[in-house]
Image 1 (cartoon, rainbow, N blue to C red):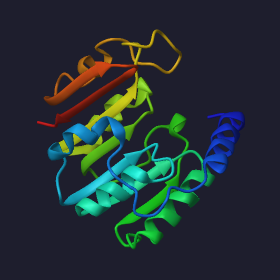
Image 2: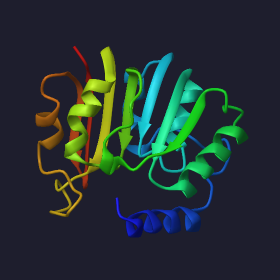
Image 3: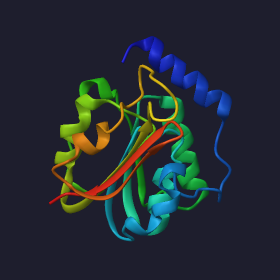
Length: 182
């Protein structure tokens, strides 16, 4: 990612500030399907931003590693986990995903909310343990029209067609998939 992109995200997260403690439900795309997420295990939150999803998974009982390109976002995520008393279940790292996913162990849940890079799909799938859950939500052309970071209709279902589909939805400019690795 270019330094201009990193600066953009740092500025955006600086302006947004930290999320209020205690207000950390699931990311919006996953709110209707929380029953599909486990209450134990390990998780990787890709493009975690301010850590809302990371903290939500930790509250469910998972040990979660959040990664994001923005050092500002990562600092806010650490503060959020600490404010909620979950710093023992949450770790964070600044990662430029243009270089791929960082090395690490397979996880029970890989969550990616509102970030899309088709070049990472294979690595994301491979990072999920057999029987584990992949949960991806991204901006979509469905209900919103084309855009440089929007998934085309059916893109997520096609990309993860070798997994057992638990949930798939597209509309209102968002595509969401939850699938279990065989």
